[in-house]
Length: 148
Image 1 (cartoon, helix red, strand yellow):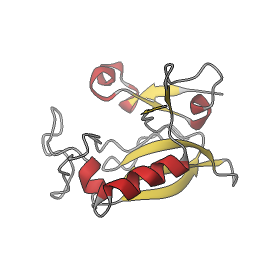
Image 2: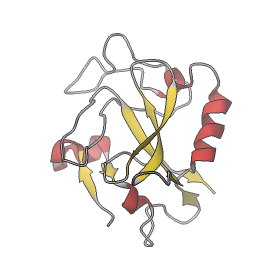
Image 3: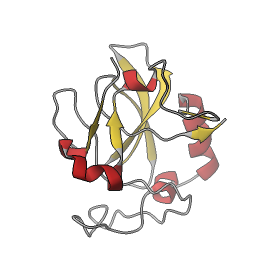
Image 4: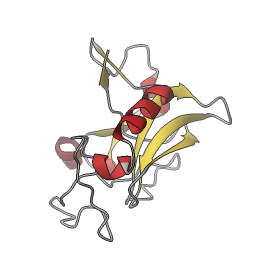
């Protein structure tokens, strides 16, 4: 079933960081997206990445730190955010409830992976690229919307 959580399971993080959703929430018939918007498919994520071109991750990552982690992305991994996407390095929520990989940003696509309860996602790391990978549908990741 669809589910969501706050980063570190703490509601104080909602205003600044939003929610992580599992993949089932992405496909909940009530819908996460308001009218006129939708969760991008794997193909649409590819279009975004291709449009941004070389160093697409660099163009999507925040260029600054914030509050509790003033350094932003670790090891001088901040982006230039020229796309206005503003990805933050908060990782994801594992299906076991932990929050590993704090120095990455993961985003669901609406496309089923059709392999071992997985779906396609995009993720950014300390490097300057956006990667495509299958993740367990029970994990919590961010959702970004695009206009219909």
